[in-house]
Length: 621
Image (cartoon, rainbow, N blue to C red; front, side, top):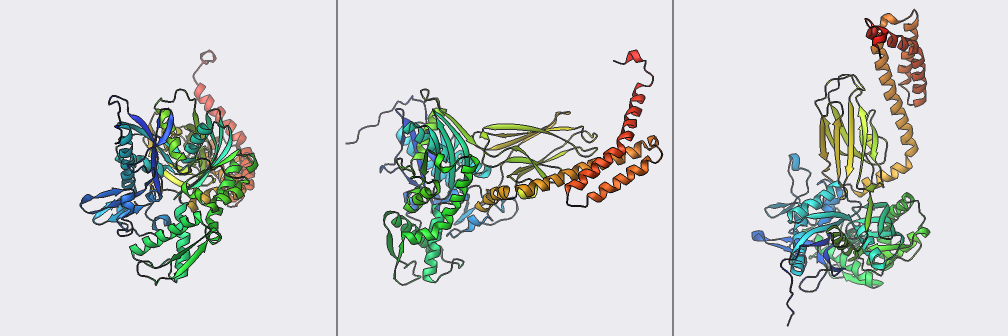
């Protein structure tokens, strides 16, 4: 006979930690000072991240939904995390899958929506169903559930983080914090093992990859560098196997296949991958949905290593970059913590050993360590961990800034700054009579707007016309603890202000992230040269406007022959502007400055005499 679970109905709600994963999701809480993963009625800790939409508004989540995947491939949504915060036209969205996507025009044209019968369902709604199921599981254990700490990949951008918070809101859940998955893992590991040192967290899940370098020191968890790819994980290993199976069968990847065939092929690939985690070779058939006669094939672990080696090398590139950002060598690490179900694969563990030159730490379950860290953080935020002095210091993955004159990017927040963080910069107008500021927010490491990713645009209007350089615009960038950006702009002379929460419509794909960082390193010298040229041109144009305006207004103050010298210097500068070199422009600017210096001094004296006319000396303080 089962014991009755007795709980205090007046007890305060208990905070929970949630790992909203690509393949599986989990929920945990701290009980009696120790974090525990909460199970379902069958004592299973993993909830498959699967949602089935049936007739009459029937919705199934978890194992029951996963069982429907073969017979109802378009009605059963798997790996929805890969679609969160993405645009409908991104390659990742259309990658080999059985789904039918809704299409429309206007503002909704580029929003991912699954067509399920007569319904159109967004990834946020699918994720909300998974979160509801996790909350219900927690309620069976705790009676009353408070807020939740939800983990996200460290390389999730604003759109993906906001989509996660939106899903929680739909599920009726208060989000205490969005916590980066590697940081959560380090929190669980550090507090469980009571260890200090510098650790790398290699997090390879079903759909995302993160690498984070952390310093663990007496309860302080400081992220020194982070990197990742929000479109790389175990699902991509499955697709690599699918391509191999298509080659074996004579089918082509680009062909249109029935949804049930696509689903069965993906499941076959996943079964092969799991088999090779346990054994050196697996034998299988390709009798899939009536497409091929029964025939025996085999795949070895070594062959799989060749198939997925390009994907693993991508993780190696990101790892080496993170070490470089942290100014560390692999041998300076005290350990490498493995996180994510894909790190169970012997091929992955061997790859990690080769990259870091040491055996990875495998003494904690890579599939539960993240949710345990989330539960600990939830308990801390709820004030239940007064005996533990814990401080989490996470970082910004990519720099953020605004567009300035000449198509340049002025960075306000820099990559790897500790968050939460806020910084401000003051700008001014470039044109006389300017009545507004157009603010263009950008993300990336390059110097020019065209080489960075646009996040948002807004305009501050209603500024009285003034001379160029008189209006003062203060721009404040703030990143909160969830990694979300807000921008506040204020014109200081009038008090006009405007704020915007930056919620880009789509996420960064793997190619975009790699391009941003690789080009920032490879083209740093080229970018600085281009910036120098653009800045010189901006300075030249400002000087030309000022000199021409002065000549028009105070021509009577010119000495004989002076105007000709100034015009000659102007023409030299105009000619220099046609060159793709900053040095001739700077030299011509100096020449024009020298040609106008005496004229400028007379203009100042003339202006002062006008101000002082009619006043006695003793009246002037």
